[in-house]
Each structure stands twice: as structure tokens, then as C-alpha cells.
Length: 498
Picture 1 (cartoon, rainbow, N blue to C red):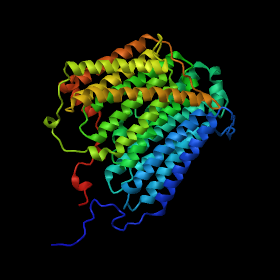
Picture 2: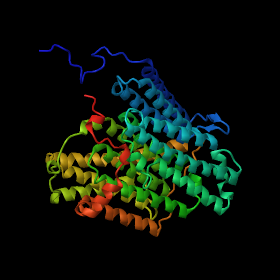
Picture 3: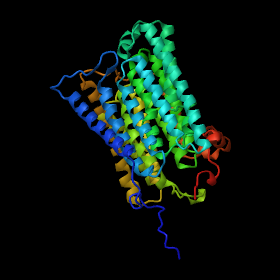
Picture 4: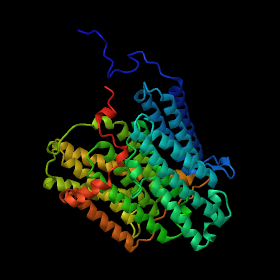
């Protein structure tokens, strides 16, 4: 019998593997940046301090900056720490950590940039680094193709953004974001529409909204830590653009309504695609596309701080899901998926939690209490609570868990969202350099009502299985949510080294 020591599955500490310097140093650096960001936020919201920090015409540290710095560095620090073991043994581990840290720095520059040129440069740099991370496994032709595809999307998105900032510069005569926002009211209608149009395309590409979702679903060749950073941070840049340039979009009710429609389209199709995907990573990818649609919708409704709260909570949750995705991989067949019927008790519990969640959100935020766009935001909360509750109530779990513990957890989640929403708004308003953010709901229009009806119809179609019952619709959604064929690993021999 062989006495050779088995090493598969053991930690690198157990087999005498020594870690290079870069992972340790850069992990320490990013956690230090997180502590500095927390301190900066504490200083900015302190009532007795009135510090204005920045480099005139280049960077401006405001409420949005300190909030996003704290979030970005925390998620990045978690990814760095996770990657030290996940990437252990890789011959290019130092390069991986340099890229992840560099990506973090570029995001921090983006959220602080006041220079229009610096904003565009940081946007492009962030995209190029992420494309490189998607193609990190250079031995796979699929990874190289995924990186190439992503790079095309990101450069294209930057081109639209660059046109937008160039037209803003020309129309307002200002080279800064803040200056352009102050002068947007003086531009002509053609200039205004051109700016709005190209900036919305840049948002849609970055946040992988339909029909620009292809790069995201084709990016599964990225190492799991890179996927976590992508879904928890990179796609959120579209929301940052909407918030930073909020005076441009909020100048017109028609534009805000158009943003709602674009976000609703992305949210509904993301949800529909997710319902037909068979594997965990593509399911998470479709989920991200849908969630970004929800984020864009909230901005279009006038709740820019709610959009920031959404991207924060989604970032934390999606980073966790990706870094724990390996624990959910299993080989099952459709008949192995056991789900009990909803039943009368389950239906009543689902309805009660949905209504209670909506009322709790209205109570904590005051949104939805008037006849304005807050009603649509509250409807989304109700539908989300109903979906989450129904999903758990139908699982083969103990009755106490399904009918008591799960509803309590989901109502708590609604409360957390509302509290984070209010906290983000408070931080941004407390900063000595106020963020240019509109937090007032827009006027309720017929389009909002139509979007609400479509959401209810889509919810019923998905929750009651109508999507899967229609073979034509099922196949159409399955094809629409397919990644590029050149990026798919089809043989185990292509990635299994044993």
C-alpha cells in the first residue's frame, strides 16, 4: 500500500506552501483603506466638524464618496482575504492581487472624481482591469474569449460615457461634474437629450441591463473572487453614474419616466431569465441583471438614495452568494426537486408577510403614503416579500420554520432595507459638501401604473409556473439567457487537471 501523503483538499499551511508577499501586503492595505474610509465618514457626519476636503476641479469628497468608499473597501477586503486561500498555489497569484487592488483604487477614484475627464478615465480603467480578471485563466481559450467580449462592451460603454461628458463640457462650459450639474439648466434641448441618451446607454452596458447582459453571462470563466467583485461592485458603477449625474436626469419628468421603463425592462427580463437557468452561476448572473434593473428603477422614481441603499445591500449579498457558491453545487434531476404545495395556511402567510412588509416600509420611510412614485416603490417591496416568503413556505421544511421563522426573517430584511435607505440619505445630507442627489418622489404617471401592472402579471406568471408551462416561452428565455458559445466549457477535460 502506498504511504504517499494525500494533499488534495488540505490547506496550503498543511503542505508547507508559503504565500508570496503581494497577497499579504495588499490585503493589509485594503483593510487599512477601509478603516480610513470609516474614519472619513465619521468625521463628515459629525455635527461639530465642517471639513471640506478635496482637490478643486479634480476630486470632491462628499456624502456619496464616503459611503461608497466604506462599502467598496469592505467588500474588496473580504474578497482579498478570501482569495488568499482560494487562489493559493496559482503561479500568477501576485498579478491577481495587483489587479484586484488596482480595481478597488479605480472605483474609489471614480466615486470621488469631480473632473469629467478623470471620471471617464477611471470608468475605462475599471473596465479594462475587470476584463483582465475575467480572462485570468489564460490557458483556457474560453476565458480569453470572455475577456475579449467583455473588453468590447466596456470600451463601447466608455465611448458613450465620453461622448456624454464631452457634450456636457461643450454645453455647460465646465470641466467638472459639479460645475456641469449646476449649468445643466442652461443647455439647449438637443444637447440635453444627447447627454441623457448616451449616459443611459453607458449605465445599461455597465450594469448589464437587457439587451447588454451578454458580457455578464459570458464572464463565468472568471475566478470566483473576481466574480464576487464584479457582481458586488463593478455592475454598481451604473448606479453611481445615475446618482452623481442626478441633476441631469431629474431635470425632466419624461427622462425620469424613461429611466423607470428601462430599469423595469431589465428587472423583469432578469427575473424571467433566472427562472429558466439550470446552474448556480448563471442563475446568479441573471439575478444580478434583474437587480440592477430594480436599482435603475429606484433612481428613475426619484429615490436616488434608495438606489444607493439597494446597490449596497445587493453588493454584500451577491458577494456572499458567489463566495459560497461552491457549497450549493450538486447534481440533481428535476424530479429530485421537492416542493410542497402552498396550501391555505401558506397562502395566508405569504399574503400577510407581503402586506406587512409594504406597511413596514411605508412606516419606516414614509414612501408610498402619498399618491406619487413612492407607491410603485412600495409595490416592488410587497412583491419581493411575497416571492421570498412563498419560496420558503413551499420548501419541505418544518412547519415552524416555514410559517413563523421565515416570515420574521423577511420582515426583518424589509426593515433593514428601509433603515439603510434612511441612513444613506442622512449621511449624504449631513456631509458638509452635500451630494447632488434628488430624494423626492416623482409625479405618478400612467406609465408608472402600467409598469406596476406588468410587474404584477410577471410575478404571477413566474410564481405559478406559467413560464415553464409554455415550451415556446421557456425555450426563448433559455436561448436569450445563453452566454456566448465561445466562452462555454463543454468538456471536463478542458478544466479538470486530474
